[in-house]
Image 1 (cartoon, rainbow, N blue to C red):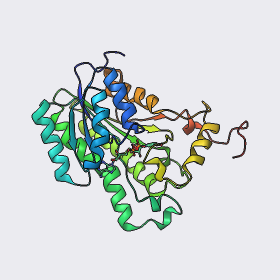
Image 2: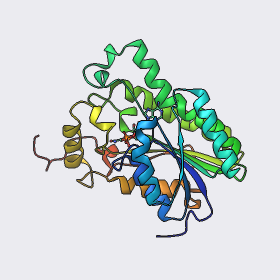
Image 3: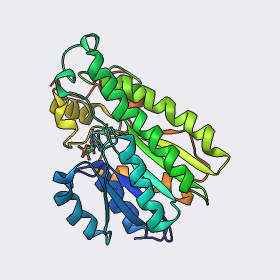
Image 4: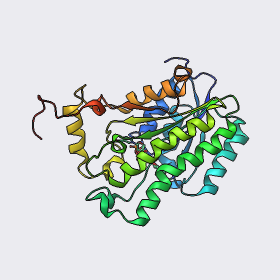
Length: 264
Ligand code: NAD
């Protein structure tokens, strides 16, 4: 443990269970001395999130459905009443109809395109606007993205288009809020077996492919994403904004299947 986040207070959005990337990040921040609040989507998840938050000494749990602007407003009003100011926010939220995370991108429906963009892209912008109003001593905003934003990955489809928009929005938000000493970054994580990932077609194959072909010849863990998040959210990352940091065992630099990788 370390003191990199001592005296800092922040919100974690997107914790569903102990496999969530949000959990890897929360543990790393808690271990560094941060005081944490958690938002969760719907009452059903509260039973899961409560005990996890308690493990990190956190008892601030706030319901928030990011599809609803009033719900986001209530979240930040509650945090304002409780803490007055905020130092960081982690947005680990994405959603699309899993029937469209297989097959062809070109067949994406208008309704699911709009919903995927709303929940996976616009929600981060909406959160940043409200959070930045509470970041009176500067702050750091973080979201999660995937390589499917940059290159075509099987089955990622509309989510890849959404992540490309999310990465672009990180740059615009960095410019808007930089003069207030608020930084905005994304982590592009390699594939990790989570609830959201299980909705993607052939996800086991994608994980195996990444394991065999990434420079480190393995997949990354939620703890490794947590360590990178600690860098971006703490003073260690004070010079970094508008960035998409890859935590993917190096997979994004590879241009060809590894010569030592067996056929799978
Ligand atoms: P997860 O299922 O544990 O987390 C997804 C979270 O999104 C859940 O907590 C869910 O409640 C929340 N969510 C969905 N719709 C919501 C809404 N309307 N309002 C509020 N919350 C909502 O899965 P995860 O893999 O930890 O996903 C976290 C983030 O990481 C996502 O943005 C995902 O795209 C990204 N990511 C995941 C991987 C991976 O391989 N798992 C790789 C790169 C990026």
